[in-house]
Length: 510
Image 1 (tube, rainbow, N blue to C red):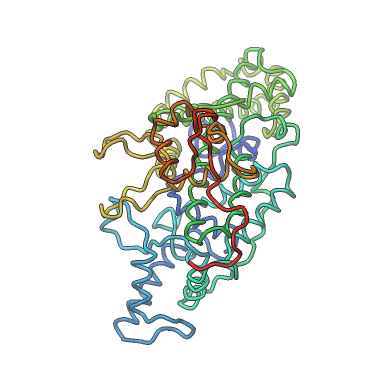
Image 2 (image 1 turned 120 degrees about the horizontal axis):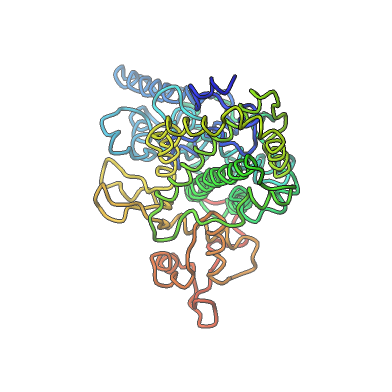
């Protein structure tokens, strides 16, 4: 591919060095609710035979089989414990997940992803056959947030075991897994192989020296949630997992947008003879030491839109530079996956900038940006998809049935008012508060200052003034949930309390 061909369709084909980078945003995020993230994670980690595109049709097929048995008054399949009407009531009552307002007239099966056997027919990002694999994004987060391949593999296997249903799960979860399988879900639950081409780790020096990386915090929080599974019912644990997944996934994608924008500034400076020289300088320039993606109580989507727009501009610029180097006969042969790689690419650009200037790279960049102005403003294409992903992953579920508006309690964003045009503000739901307090205190021996929760939120890019916690809705949630102890000797007069017992019972009922 040449630079001229890239100009014709700049979003269609990326340069191999850019596309294969461990810092690339892959898979490209689109719409996904928290339940879609969990359902797709089931399919990615343990249901290899189930593709994302087959899920909507599998749901329709199950509905048709149920309707046929009802119409013909047929007996339920062998191995089931419920009749046809009762099983239909479970799917459309006990397990049903509320539809969005724009889905009220659509007929499709949507249930809470409580056990693996529900994932083959529910929880698709789209109702068509071209859904994006949200579970693959979670898998890349696990690898990028782990020290090395072996550590990531061990965490992935622990997550697979926790997502499965065994004797330690409650009676309802064990029954539901068996019952769903008896009604026609024959997909085997077994650990799926992980293609090495789809995951990557950061080099050890980068991993150890980065002060801010949401994927690393996510890996730690995942360990804490897995360890706490036996302290609660299956539904409670799944809700906590959803809360951490939705926050971590959006923070990770936003971090990648931020990193790519910073890398582009390095390369742009190199084109004028500047830019970082050496690995340490490249690391300092390319990776943020801290970030403020959202402010507690403040509007969120405008800031995320700025990050997405910066990423799109960086993506165009980086690909244009790489294709320009190829056109000049001096192609870049390395990767763009570490601070060392970034330093090498900057030097390569400095060494060949005269040839690129003669080829008119600056004019090409200006033309492409003008041509793609609407896309850069996130009004269509990749940018619009990124905003839709953030909005639906973080935001409280807006339901078609008003009586079910309290269904989602693990949200990070909520509407400031009742109007459809009301802005989305950062405000944690009670389930999200429980999950984050547990993860913040994981490994601690007892109560800790409220400052600990502020630090934990900051590790995901959410800024909260601990002096305000006692007065805002976060402090109210903490008190209502019994997660704080007011103490005049503690910072801000509040101590965080662990939400779950240190030694949970190993067997329980739902």
